[in-house]
Image 1: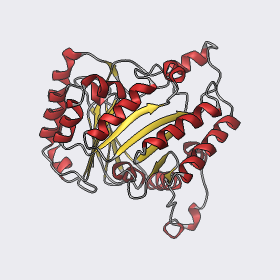
Image 2 (image 1 turned 90 degrees about the vertical axis):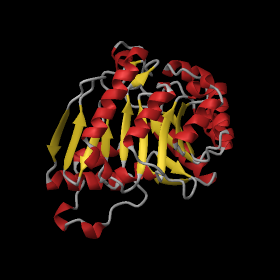
Image 3 (image 1 turned 45 degrees about the vertical axis):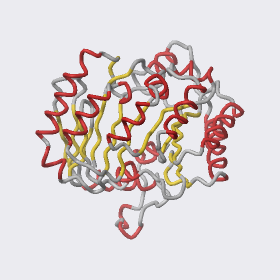
Image 4 (image 1 turned 30 degrees about the vertical axis):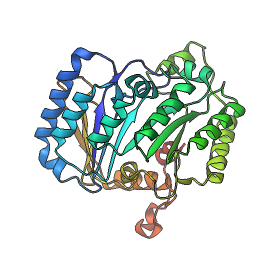
Length: 330
């Protein structure tokens, strides 16, 4: 189970606080070379992390990285025939690159696409500082389908104060009409250091009410349930049998290897490590989790899923929910 972080973006979304840097083509090669050096130095760890046998390349915006660099990274990893190989993409990158690009991704072994649509309202997309419009998102989805991708996940965001229930419903119904295999829906959150946080501090944005967010989440749940999607995690829905293998393993605390700047890893049950946030020269730190922290993580992650937590595996003395678990679920 491998995660690769590509920290390049052509622009920053209003709400985002993930580690990323503005696209700098002169750094692509240096980043790729250093990533491959990290892969080589962690070869034994990578080769032992095959349960499940998945690769997820996220960011940032991996689709801004020229194909030859993606190809070099995948070849350096050395594995083939991943059960699930997901690549995150921006719709504009697909449309701009043309039909040859999805075909290249298929040849590389990518068998699942995660596309950040976020909304199909052009006004909302402009406020989010997204690079695509609704028409571009639909074209990108069509191009991916024509290239043979039969496992596509689309992301959407709800809970914006200016997003009416009508706008959201139109987006959800249009997305359902595309028949993607997977849909993720995330409530807008204010992350420290994001452009959105600054807008709130300056009085340029007022957050949506709890009632609006609850109402919109309930609407998404209802519409996707009626369309036959399985609501298997708080923010994730899939057609039966198309649940994300890689992300589902996170929620059951499977060990994973995170590569690249800002990436996190879990070794065994009790060692978490993370890389520093730097395009080159990134370093790694780690922490050892206590038995109590492991139990809390199991509870928090399990309660996010439809499978829940097996009460028989929890000592009676632990039958409580701490404030930290409650906060993580909100």
